Amino acid sequence: MIKQVIIIALSIITLIGCKNETKKVEVAETIDKNKVEVKTETTQEDYQVGSQVPNKLVCMVNNAYMGKPQIAVPVNGKTYYGCCQMCVGTLNEKESARTGIDPFSNKPVDKTDTYIVLMKKEGEVAYFESKENYLKYKKSN
Image (cartoon, rainbow, N blue to C red; front, side):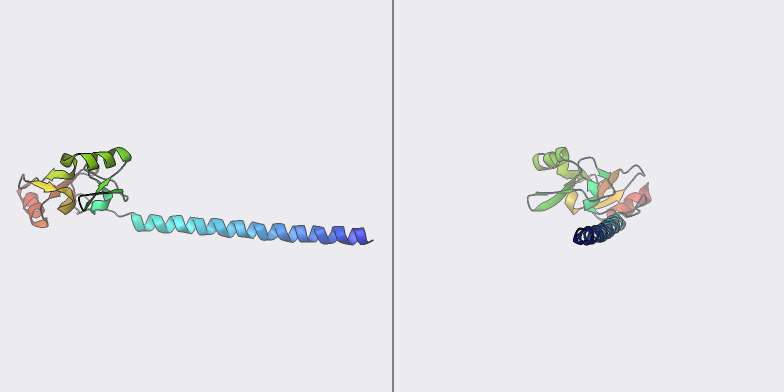
């Protein structure tokens, strides 16, 4: 009789324990899904051709808008951005990768100090000395 009571008690405890674990897993999955959704909402922006784009969303080696934050590359007190380890190395080693040409003035510009504009829907960007230079360029083209 005592054996039967112990077996029934253990069975009930096991069933209750399994039921609670399932709830924990479901809650954890829901939390993870919410985290991913929130992260996606805060990183995606809809930039149109002609829009200024933030430095951190541009691979400064490929001169391309990437649509998500890139790898920060600090060089000489300024922060450049690259999309992969190869670009990080290039930005560290080559000054030419950190410099662009303003299409309006044809002057060299440091990519971190520029007004970056999305030029083509495929992601190509251009670096302007200022917003004024971009507006003058836009008018002349």
